Length: 290
Length: 143
Image (tube, rainbow over all chains, first blue to last red; front, side):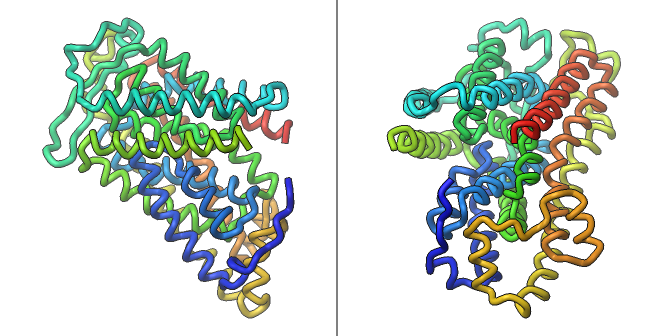
């Protein structure tokens, strides 16, 4: 990894200014991250590295902290409004964590350049599919899913203003499980945020309501990130002066984002997710072509 | 979930969550978040109170844009730093508290499912915890 010499932009700042800027950016990243069920790395990494000249190793360490902070900050409202389906989260976590292990094993075996391009294409297709399915589906449309019945994955969540429970049924839990394994492998292999792939999987394959997809993803991404956090800590990639303000900002932002998620209309959440998904696909394409 | 409703096809829509489940799913992350925020804030205040008099601020910022390992990154080092009132070590303690919380939540899920006598999901959650620990071990060996 090339050592980047410090440039004037960052050095002109005092440590306090630097910490406050990072904190403020992190509040925004936390709001967006918890709203969409992603860890906010796609926001934080470019800003830290490009705008503030932070070394990429520290930026990655801060991202891991940001993902976990998103997960924890969002937990209160996600749980209260029942957007986190604990059963689905645990069921899918076995697949995504096993996938992440596979991905880590495959790093060095597979040349991943074309994978970036391929996956950027998959993400664009997901974005198109998610954009098309904006209309809310009724429970009666759902096909039977015996695995979901047996594991009792169906549940209901609460919409904030009315506090009325909205029941939902799961379909395609088998397909979702397999795709979650693939998503986990890709995030381990390509080093991309896991939420950006988890949410479309739950949305498209299992037909969860978008708010339950993001709320359940918020729980899952914390577990995925925690699996690697110890390594980053031991390698000295978690710099307290960067990760500290990031953690504090994201915790506060994520709590606000989870509150906002309860109030926003589902189609708005979906639209924002599609935009961020396309943004992530573009970043990934650039990495593949570079 | 009540014991009566816990048959394999029983309804799960509107069951009352037990106090234990509430404690684990709502209170645990909140306590962790508040405690972590407090530690990070305290650590930052301690750092600024000391550092700005000792080191030119621009040097510290430069330290963040280059790879220098001048901060604690092992558990004994963090513990030593906290005992000495070292700001960065206190910040790191807050971060470490966050990092272990997801594992605690999985452990909490195991307890919740055990309390609900849901053997399938006790096993599923145990598998998740095992995979999490395995990832940590594999990562350590590789890194």
